[in-house]
Length: 428
Image 1 (cartoon, rainbow, N blue to C red):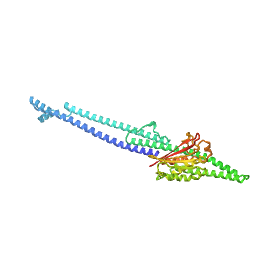
Image 2: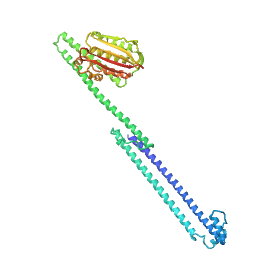
Image 3: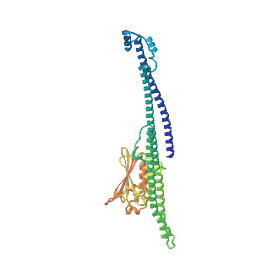
Image 4: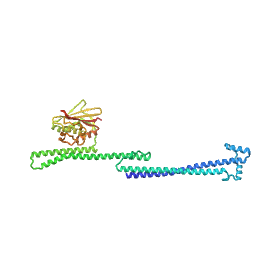
């Protein structure tokens, strides 16, 4: 900021020197113009005096009507006698000497008045230029002070121009002001982004510590119990199995957190290439097949009127990961001997994939909450199941980065229960 202000001062100092040189040029030009105007006026007065003397000379050398006719001809602009003899006659009597006749006195008076008026006009012109220069310099100082105050605001993390002031005008100052407005907007956006990242980091640390608290406490309790010597082999095996499950949960959470961190920081780059979405879905089904088999849950892919394969641009690895999260979620919250149905349909601009289960269902007020990071729902059945609450969040991020959407519709009341997750991906 200080460097910017110093650069601004240097630019304004250079502009002031330029204005000073311009002022000198204007004063010189004004002086020359007034001198030329005064010279022309004096020349006209001298010419007028000579014409009057010529008329007097013609009248002095003539007699009667002849001299009067010659003088009238001169007054009308006609050519007449030069009146040289009359001029010598007037000169012999001393009437052509300075201050010897009324016309000579009038000429001197007019020349003096023209000279004084020229000097007065020049003085007023210089005074006006000096006033304009001082006003311009004062305005420049005020503008520089305003710029300094704005930069001090920026240093205090206040990126709004005082009172919502707009650009004071065009030219260099207008450009500087526009740049300051743009700089303030960018810095304000950066400040808000930093604050959002700070709050996000704080929330993330809080959520991670909350999610780690339960498995770590469980592991600690199991190890303390295993340290006792009065446990039977069967009890020891049960507590070791509990430790294994807790460690598997921690490992799954750590992997999910790594994926979330890489996704949010841009370390994971989605590379969309045309591929068969059906093959991606079948790959995800194969990854969760053993978990479904343990609970005797069947996964059925319903074929519609459209051909089973759809070539759409997507990142096979990450879209497969999103399908795995949805299928594992359906398996986790569904009872044994139930069915998970998958339906695919192509529309004009997008592909619709529905994954329906016969599980515990999701309350309507939680439709948007379940896609939040670490959210697992408020139901008792949800709390009893293992999970970290990051799978659906990661799924939404992956599908969103492909330009698609993921939503849920559920039945959680009455005899029929279950949830349907709808994934929509653009065809091109």
